[in-house]
Image (tube, rainbow, N blue to C red; front, side, top):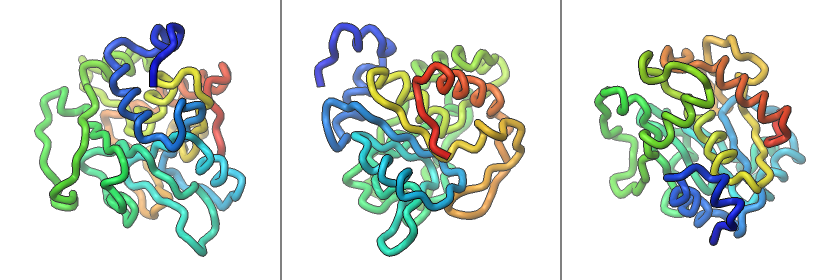
Length: 226
């Protein structure tokens, strides 16, 4: 994909190559629609699932779930780009058909000196691209208006995925779904479409993420399907 002058100006400097890489995995180019799925529980909706599957590019995160044949349609059946971290709890979908997808590894706490491990659940030949912390954390932290470096904070993987869609594809229609913190920014625990729950990690500031995402909604930069 060749960027127009306006698009090249809008996409953050240093992230144009990441945009090109993500676009290479899209169903259609140029990318005019992007769906980003968080992992909060969603009820059945043929309309939502169809809108997701009809998107040019579908981005999912961590312990994502896909619609399976014969089951109610909820969140669509495609995953073109996966953004995940080393403590992801794999579902039966996480590494299914992994050779056909782009896996972007989010490891923001490594920027703060936390050591990382190689989880045994990963396929031995899994190819992935680490997200560029130096480029992303500064920009996301500034947008969230939080002292991310001093307090060793980190954005959630879901917000990172949404931020990438909004920032790298400003000319596209952005569809978001599965983001519980928009309606419940004070929650202390995540619940998942795949089942189970976990505490919200202390390095996250989901109230700030909810504020930014609400601003996107008010500015009509994104749409949110509940």
